[in-house]
Image (cartoon, rainbow, N blue to C red; front, side, top):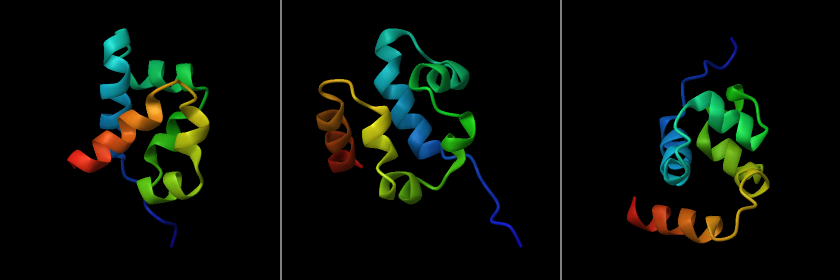
Length: 74
């Protein structure tokens, strides 16, 4: 049986919070800006992080610090 994919709200919330400052709020816009498929946003967060995808799609200066701060606060 194939693994059922559920929407990864945790990742989307982090993406949304990071980009809302730049008025980027739609899932398709985030996907387009990051040059990743929307389906990647359905991957389990642990799998995305273990593949270091977060590091690859967030080359923006300060982003790593931002996510570390989010991790501390969650």
